[in-house]
Amino acid sequence: MEQPVLELRDISKNFGMTRALAHMSISLFPGEVHAVVGENGAGKSTMIKIMTGIYPPSSGALQVDGTTVTISGPHMAREKGIVAIYQEPMVFPDLDVAENIFISSTREGLIQNPARLRHKARQLLARVGISLDVERIASGLTLAEQQAVEIARALSQDVRVLIMDEPTASLSAHEAAQLRRIATKLAEDGVSVVYISHRLEEVFDIAHRVTVIRDGEHISTRPVSEVTSDGMISEMVGREFESLFEKSPSVARPEVILEVKDLAVDEIFSGVSFDLHYGEVLCMAGLVGARRTDIGLALFGIHPAGSGTVSFKGKPLVITSAAQAMKAGIAYVSEDRRKFGLAMPMPIRENITLATLGEFLSRWGLVKRKKEVEVAETFKKRLNIRTPDIEMAVGMLSGGNQQKVMLAKWLNMKPDLLIFDEPTRGVDVGAKAEVHDLIREFVAAGGAAIVISSDLPEVLAMGDRILVMREGRQMGILTHEEATQENIMALATGQTSTREVA
Ligand SMILES: Nc1ncnc2c1ncn2[C@@H]1O[C@H](COP(=O)(O)OP(=O)(O)OP(=O)(O)O)[C@@H](O)[C@H]1O
Ligand SMILES: [Mg+2]
Image (cartoon, rainbow, N blue to C red):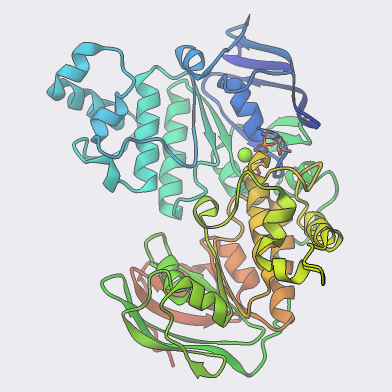
């Protein structure tokens, strides 16, 4: 049999009390796309960090081309041809594309010869079929383009194992498809591609083999032709799993909580009009660039609207700041958990309960610790937040588990209107259904929700109605009964003409 390029043998990794990896073994062969799936906190990113020398293993061995090696850091991993690209790419905003690609090139001559640099950069991009102007300054690149730069950078260094950790989480469907094409092309060229994703349909699209890990342990490795989606999920969660996304019955009431008329922010979006009922979940669908986040930010007062009217709980409301929006009872759960959400060094418990501290103060002004712990433990259980201890810093959690803490924090605040922006990005399939249930419970308890999501199955499962945006224009509002993946996409891509919206 062929020799693996990279092999982990019986690798364990402990972080204090947490066993992130337990006797993990995996072999990566040249020319394969090897998908790795598992729940949030299963140990996927930790495994990548061991492959790329960011963490040393607690025990076990790594082999490159059949020889045991110690990878003492990312630099050494790169020398061996092992490179990872992440969701948030590393590009230098002031440099152009070509300079970014060759940023770590030691070939002096290349840097000093801009014409040659650009020529080389074009060649690399062409190799993976990316069309990108190499003279463009990186600060203007989309996330997908930045990832393309990272891939080209990896290629410039003779990559043999390219690891992608949830690379498509923030990409539009079109961009994600292009990235998968690039991954496939690289594998055809003999690169071993490791592909981590919570989107199982992607796994079926590109992987040759699939490895499932659970609780840090290797569960299975199989050719993709021998796996089914249900089987994979059962292995991931360790039990049978059925009926993933069933639409729960609507609890919308006749009374309107929010009425938005002709809302606009100059040159960003315009003509946004809808009403939202108590108990209702309104989903906003659209491609990346549809300007859905901007609508959320306008309603939350971060980028106040330039024109249009909003009436909230029966009264006109001019929203000019986030503080004012919160006071009125409107909250916004950002897609960017670092920027607006979590205090990474603080314990999970405090992150969940901080905003509602008032509720936990006793008569003597002491925090009712017991109540706080109770609330945090309840969310931990419902959302399956993977941690030995709610006193642990949020920053120590896996990406998906951080997302769950952020949702817990905002749900616990119990505002009247919650705007969720991509609530389940990076959240595993099992926890997704639980997040949906919590949003339902929240609206059933008297609130209303707007859910911005690029995940069509999620939109169909959650939305009592679905508002579709395209390039800053409202294309239509579909009822749950009317909505299908096809007609949402048709509106989102402008294939269907604008519907009249009452
Ligand atoms: N630096 C760290 N310190 C302490 N614990 C850590 C650290 N890094 C990871 N862990 C823990 O190790 C476990 C595995 O985390 P990891 O990030 O590998 O999960 P993952 O499979 O990538 O999850 P996700 O799908 O959410 O990204 C988790 O319990 C996490 O809290
Ligand atoms: Mg991860």
